[in-house]
Length: 313
Ligand SMILES: [Zn+2]
Image (cartoon, rainbow, N blue to C red; front, side):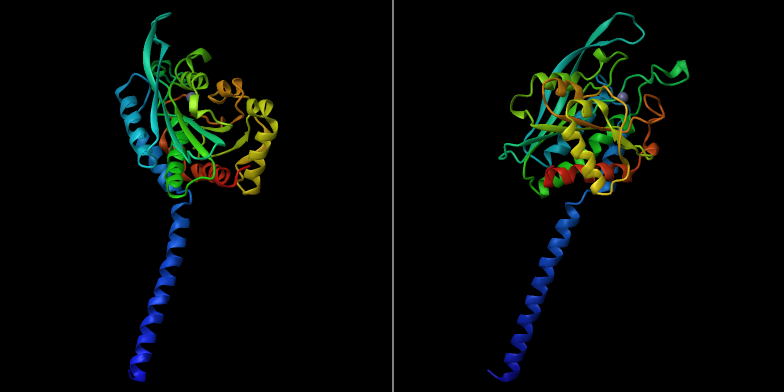
């Protein structure tokens, strides 16, 4: 072999090694990018739910949304189940008449080999009435629920995508509650979380986080009071983490006490925190639409939850 041949072999080998190195580095960058919370992706999931229209239990749109959410979650884990139940609900406009509706919680599990379990929850149904509308004539119309419904689900589905790519160091159970937002009295709300609290079985978590109304463009999240009163240290650690991460909409002050899906779980002894921005002028009106929400708000909440999943508290 001539010296020139040797030189060219050496040259080719070094090129190969350099390109391998570059590929490895690209992989690291790609992986990091792919496992970072993607606000645009999350916002597309919010919009997609709204494209079905209002999604109250008993409607065709509700069924279509259930199938869509089930299929989406199935892309990210094999363990997705429907938890069916029935609820006796108000027939609006017909006093004292109840009807039975079929509802489903949608449950997905990740990192099943770990025993410590973090529950992540949001409600996927939307309210069948717009009772906060000033105009009485439209108060019996169903709301779109871009923020009150679609926002929490959007964040959790984007997180499910990340969980598939980067297995979590603890078991994560995602529950999408049905029947959170039905009637006017609290016995006509939280159907799904009340059913789940009584029938947790193998999904029983050690602690949990509920996301509700977190898509508001003008995001402000004080500490929710029921969460704080029930489990002060746990709640405190979540807000402190948000502040450490520089997520300014999280405000370290006690906000209002809000009856929501976390309460039935707190009642059976699960430390459960509600991340919610209740200061939303379009709440339970026909104006709760996509344009009132922003990808940035979903990202702020998503970043915090992703951090807690992988770093713990
Ligand atoms: Zn609501």
